[in-house]
Image (tube, rainbow, N blue to C red):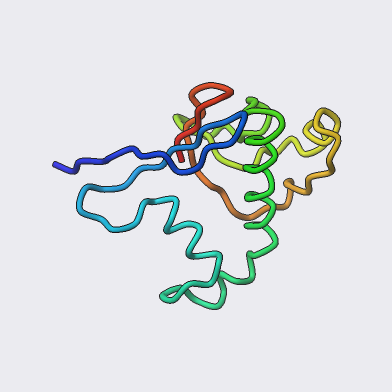
Amino acid sequence: MNCYIIEEFETFAKVRFYTIYKDGDVYTETDKFFARFLGEDGYTKDDLNFREDFDAIVNLIETMGQKHGAKDLFFRHEKAAHALPSKSSKKISTIVGIAFAYMSNQLRLYCIRLTDKVVIF
């Protein structure tokens, strides 16, 4: 039986983000995602082609965390989970006042949004 552990990933004024890792693994699932698109060893050069999409997700995490909270409109609903970014870039830019180009984002950071203040990646 696999055992997973939840730990704090990042805390901002408006949102606390958590991540999971499989008991015995060195890196959390979120660490693996971040390392892949930051060009760490072990990943293909093709992953670096998604750097702009990756940066947009990081920007959204920081914006939610510092200014707006984890509002439902920031998330893409995918069956039992959520994902970042949302498909609603026009609606987000109207509410937030920042133009986000998320419609064409090819990456997904899967998560579970528990409340406006708690998200598990």
